[in-house]
Image 1: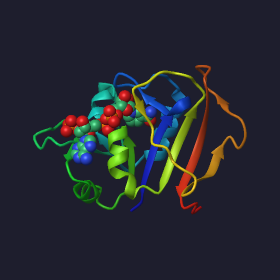
Image 2 (image 1 turned 90 degrees about the vertical axis):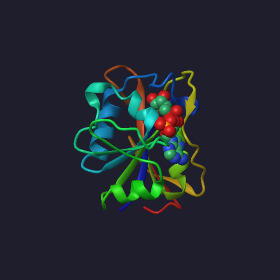
Image 3 (image 1 turned 60 degrees about the horizontal axis):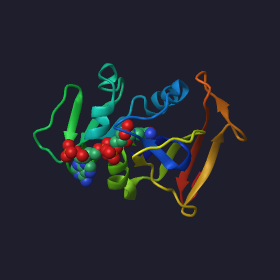
Image 4 (image 1 turned 60 degrees about the vertical axis):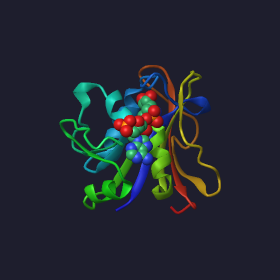
Length: 168
Ligand SMILES: NC(=O)c1ccc[n+]([C@@H]2O[C@H](COP(=O)([O-])OP(=O)(O)OC[C@H]3O[C@@H](n4cnc5c(N)ncnc54)[C@H](OP(=O)(O)O)[C@@H]3O)[C@@H](O)[C@H]2O)c1
């Protein structure tokens, strides 16, 4: 079982504002679905709340929601409080930690792979992505290798794969 993290960030590290993501890049949502398909996704209760109802639970993935409230429940989600329980509930599937910031921080010690979408956008926000310092983190793949993709919505974006300790 591996534990990776996946997020999208604007310039300056902004990843959320008012409980949502302040941009719309459909190609990134497709990339997110492809990377996490068939595996377990771990998210904070606030990120679950932020998902549009029609996308909850995220299809074709085991939805594990971390909360301190043992009474919390939602159709299609399995809740847990301790990381050890999250690991057990994944039942051997690879885990993608999908946010938000509190959950990235809680799981930081277990994450050695990060799929980061860079959005070429200046925007204000109230939630910022973790900073992956080099070393120990290193970019091992970049799509496109140089430059940017351009979304149908006009924004430029790029997919970076980072590994801790630079393992490829
Ligand atoms: N750009 C991206 O890729 C991306 C990805 C995901 C989310 N986001 C954005 O990020 C924002 C939400 O992030 P956030 O950091 O505010 O919230 P979050 O991490 O999604 O959820 C926080 C909640 O998780 C639970 N929690 C946190 N630490 C815990 C621990 N150690 N043990 C047990 N439960 C714990 C608590 O739930 P209870 O209060 O129920 O106890 C807490 O309120 C939104 O704006 C969202 O749109 C962006």
